[in-house]
Amino acid sequence: MKQFLDQTFPLFSKIVKDIEVNFQLTTRQKAVFGCLQAAHARDFLLAIPIEGLGQHMSPVEYRTILKYCLMIPLFPADELCHVCRKACMDRFGEHAVHCRELTGFKYRHDFVRDVLFYVFKRARLFVKKEALVNFLTDPLEGRSTLRSTDVLVYGWVV
Image (cartoon, rainbow, N blue to C red; front, side):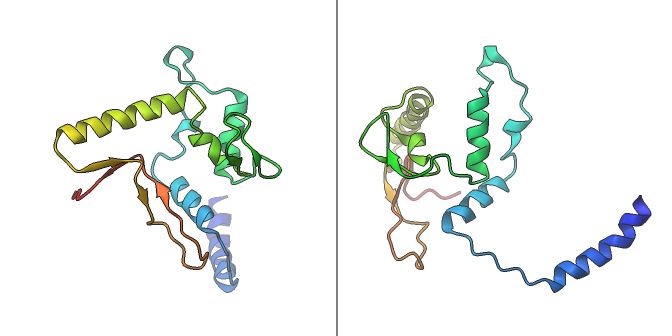
């Protein structure tokens, strides 16, 4: 088998080099693919479910996460959020991640955000909660992509 692979690999690489590949990815797709390539991005797939530690997922949660990672739309079309009835749910369900009316992990996330904000403030660093930043702007889209940060620390140098 190894000999077969050694013989076919050069042929395969030659074919791949000869094929012109032109993918047109959106900014969102580039961001998701970039995140998925990060170290430990898919470690949740290897975690052993332990109910007592809250380290478990229902089948619905698991399918939803996989659909999100594979960029498969979760909803057929944009519709009004069933929880807050204020915002429009996008096809990929990103509004559900930050809907203010949802409890559970959102509360824990905000608690961590508030603690970090308090620690930075006490350390006399200039910090702002929910600051709007525009570092993911794509000039080809022709629109502003202001996004809210959880905690923005000004003048942070690593």
